[in-house]
Length: 207
Image (cartoon, rainbow, N blue to C red; front, top):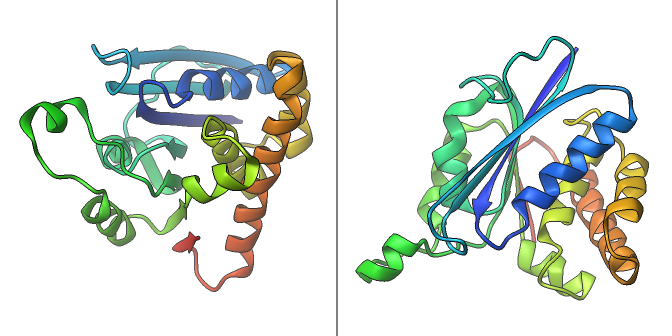
């Protein structure tokens, strides 16, 4: 059995930490893991994509296009950019808030993410749109979006990694003073996935 998870966002959103938490959780479950990241030129604001492959007989850390079981997208445009990696029937969890890319900032272009979300709604059957800003406000920090997305993914069953598995890794890898905060974000993300399961259909936007 194999699971492929692709995480995408921009610099400063915690994409790499989230991928490491998934990888460590998989390792603790006895799974073989390969990971890799591609990071844009801008340390903050540039594209960041992380591949996490878990299971047996994994020869390359890069997920082939059309074979990602789940994509965690921290930003709508990055979700669209990474969409070719999603397998048919795979799950896409995306943060609703747009982050203006460096190119648009320099060029003065307008971008709010709405067109990207509309496109995703048409193209992806198994889609969860998360209001990351609201989740972060509830958690009490703007820096826990990554863990909230992990909570949604774990609770959905898309990762084959449970919420308790992720709680263990948070305790191990996060500084003690931030463990409670991150566990709260994990629970909030899990609650969003639970709300999706109760809703009719799979194209769900939780505010």
